Image 1 (cartoon, one colour):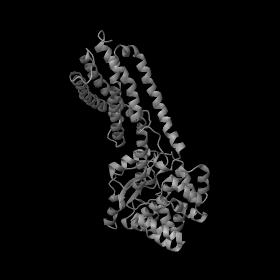
Image 2 (tube, rainbow, N blue to C red):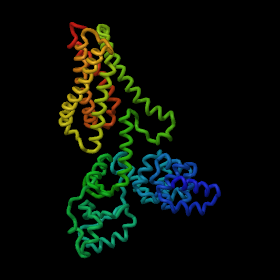
Image 3 (cartoon, rainbow, N blue to C red):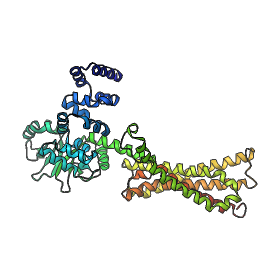
Image 4 (tube, rainbow, N blue to C red):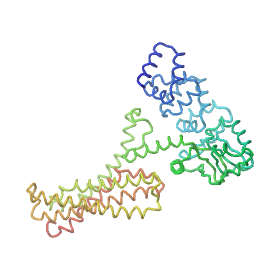
Amino acid sequence: MEELIVEEVVELIEKGDDAQLKVYLDDLNISDVEHLIDELPQHAVKFIDTLSIKRAVNVFRILDFPTQERILKKLSGVKLAELINLMPPDDRTALFSELKGDAVAKLIKLLPAKDRVEALSLLGYKEDSVGRLMTPDYVAVKKDWTVTRVLEHIRRFGKDSETIDVIYVIDKGGVLLDDIRIREILLADPEAKIGDLADNRSIALNVNDPQEDAINVFRMNNRVALPVVDDSDVLLGIVTVDDILWIANEEYTEDMHKIGGTEALDEPYLDMPIIKLVKKRASWLIVLFLGEMLTATAMQHFEIELQKAIVLSLFIPLIMSSGGNSGSQASTLIIQAMALGEVTIAEWWKVMRREIISGLALGVILGSIGLLRIIIWQNLHFYDYGTHWFLIAITIFFTLIGIVLWGSLIGSMMPIIMKKLKLDPATSSAPFVATMVDVTGIVIYFSVAVIVLKGILL
């Protein structure tokens, strides 16, 4: 179906039939037009310019930022002014926050004085705060109004609101008292006071809250919109679930990049220049490489032990990978649990206790497999580990218990420590944890070897 749409649009463009193209585009779903822009980026400006203005706004607001920026640079002056003026305040703020200063100044001049003040006010909040997401387009009523008066108010001002699913009740000073679903108002007695319908159980976001916290509030309360208040509980605006879904997607993508050991990409992978992509990846690789150099330093410290018992070197990759894997597992699980609000900083001891138990259990399992491997290989003559092969097997057994336990503890505690330091837990990514465990794993391995083999091989 999508391929057919692309073919028909290309045919209309080649014919130069702009009138028919406008009719065709205006009949498509918004998502279909977005797909057209993805498939035919060279015609993106033409599509936005051809669409009726309201549909153009709805398409433009769901495009990724690089595409939006390319369109803005080439769009005609009249259409650009209409587009910026009709964009919802929250989407406009999101766009302005991504653009460079001179571009923002140019676009703000296109707004009426009232909207200009509003835009600058929203941009005044911290970049990752709820204030950047909110829209001042909502319906608020007073608690002493009757249902009849409220409905008249909605008919008059509702068309300018982001949503009328929820109506907000405020006092004379603008303080939020409650929020009421439109369904309850429609079913109420026309002469009933709106304050009588309130249950005083409203949930609100603070304008300075991190956007990531807002995601969890929406997830836990199943709301289409939430009010935003200042420190005095004065209602400033609302945040709708569509904006939260975009932020949740961005947060998830950013965390996945960091967990993979790279800086977050601010453009689609295929649109990002190679040089910029290399820079994003190089910084973390350099940090991890320098960390791995400590592993070489640790091995140099045990050079004499290695010379005496060269057979120990055979198991270094096994030891390092087991510790790194267990650390990466724990790190990923805790980062995800923290992102979903399942684990908090205050619950660090519960996490540690669980990881001690599970780390020991996993260590015993892997250690037993390592022990059996040496026993089987020695007795079936696949490899000769020497006269003291069983002591070597015991060394591997206890080392794996220690390294898997240590990896689990490091992997689980590092995200919590990062959160406590007000840093992004995803920064303690799997590669970073694995590198830390590699270095300490060598120390654990040879420390166990010295204890078990001292006076025999060492």
